Length: 143
Length: 143
DNA sequence: CTACGCTAGATTGTGCACAATTAAGTTGTG
DNA sequence: CACAACTTAATTGTGCACAATCTAGCGTAG
Image 1 (cartoon, each protein chain N blue to C red):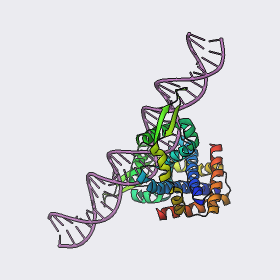
Image 2 (tube, rainbow over the protein chains, first blue to last red):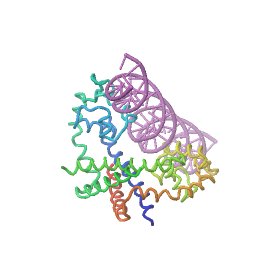
Image 3 (cartoon, rainbow over the protein chains, first blue to last red):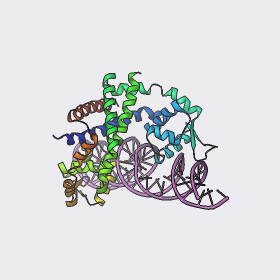
């Protein structure tokens, strides 16, 4: 087997692992009416609220085409509020509502639940994480 | 840092690596009018043609809700043909057209190109692959 | 033969990903 | 001031992911 075929398999494996992860998140988050990307956005806001759409997009690696409708849904669900900046009307500021803040506490056990399902040791997780970050950097650099 | 937070980061890393990979595939496959999932379907057919929709779905891990429209697009693009089985009219057989077969040769360098972009050694790729497969199995088992 | 249950695919509806375009607002320069 | 260049978000269009439902066809028990 050549190295390149291995790389193709690697892509497929990453692809399938990502789906397996989101399936687990879906099961856990479904009772709260959240998807994994929405949860990611909330995680980011819990740490850094408030953020502009652009800042948020930079942190979660999503552009306005994905983020705009996602934020609209989160706002409709009552978790966040969008407001135009007064000094620069191009900028939209995203803040948490009381309900959105409360979710942080309600979802505090999610990482633990994910950890249980992943079932890898701390050392394995760290190693895997490092390798994936190197790989991602390499893929981004050449594309 | 707790192990569970590490697992959350691991999910995010997998998620980002998957996107980085598909971005590379997108760039490579775009001249051929193909997406990564479409390429996966063709890869499978090049090895096993003809296949039923169900067999194909089992191999690429996609259900009919995703596969049906994808196959419709591949058929519209002239790469495949769908035909009802005569003995059991519920079954749809998916075959390659001459153009679809020719693509196998035109795309023979794709794994090599992916390998160049990934830039990992054969040993690293193998290790990573194994770890991801174990992780995926664990995630599927518990969800 | 009829009815029930099962299977294969297709369809519908919601949401994400992303390229391309648009709209609105801001800033710098003549 | 006028206006071109740039920035921020939103919108549009295509395609994937997946749950839920629907339809058609098959097979068997009664």
